[in-house]
Length: 497
Image 1 (cartoon, rainbow, N blue to C red):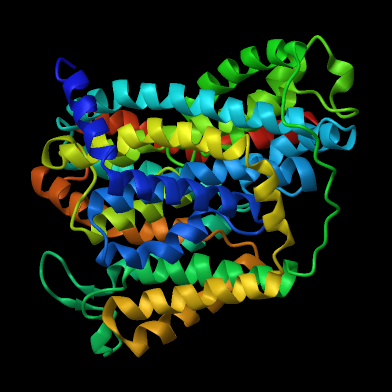
Image 2: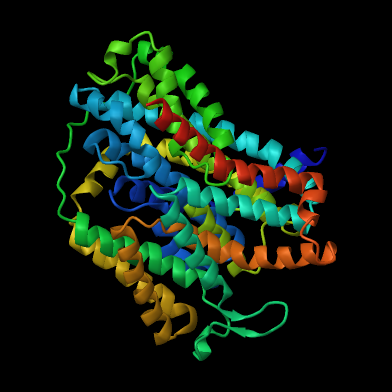
């Protein structure tokens, strides 16, 4: 903690370099645009742009990807308010009251409280990341293979249980990802596994290629095939400002949303959906104007959920940087970008790549300020993006993904594989199989396998090693609780009914 301020200042010096400022600005602008465009999102965009990791310096690309990530959260509120079409899942709750405010002629106030709330929440959450991430990293160094295996098992369990409507579908998607992670040479014994005699599979499946196929290609094809003809009515824009009364009603909601969202962002698969709904319910209960909810639109119902959304998104950096565990789909794809550079996020990252980590954290402060400037005065420009014809937009994404993947190894086999995975992604979406567990399984699967082998070596072949160590035993209990408690509560509700 004594070195915190000098390290943060050093991070600002690196992040404020002209080239890094340019990447931050481009990432924020692109992220906002992606958030505005319905059907796209940060996971698709980051996956599509992953091939740039072979050309761009690590710090610049991480700042760029982070800008896309939280920029999309800012932009997603625009379509929620004006079109009743969330650009991101975290903006779903914003549409409940924001769209009604827009219909009653208060679109400007809704957009203003969303943008300012995002800035406030993002900044406070970044301060919390700055303070707590080094502490978590310090304690995480003391964890051994049994604890790390249980952490990854917890990530697998929560990802499959929370994402998607069916736990069985989530588990199936995770198993597919784990199987994909096993393809190639065994990292310990060197034995060839599951290559089907295809020499291109000896080095394993590229996470970048799979991510681009599932998200950029799969999501785009799915949207074009099943959602591309959807038309929505755009509400009329009004001047982006808030009255004194709206300011008075917004700022407590911003703070409540911020501190509600941050803890959810730090846990595996906590996501931003749960805290945004909790924030909405809290604001509805505490509001002095409950009659506005669901009728003319209550500004607290926009301010709180937007703050919770951005706070949760910023908080995902804590487990990703300190434990190497992604708590969202986009975080999983950014984690694969780290691995592309040969950098493994985890407890040692704050020592081995300190300049990169602190530059990334410093860029969050800078990016939040950039996004406030981009979103308040230029909201009219972002609204014009909604007039882009869908067909050329989707075609452009597919072309960009194709060129990017081919540029990695100049391999036509990679292109065939990418589009095959893309078609698999379309089928997964069509039958409601979540795709996030596939990426999480591919990234964490080989790491979990290595930690399991090391843990068994420590325990001399005894499985009891996982319950003999206190932290490992607690994590195992949490895993069992995640699996058992929801089912017991559901059975109890059915019995009561």
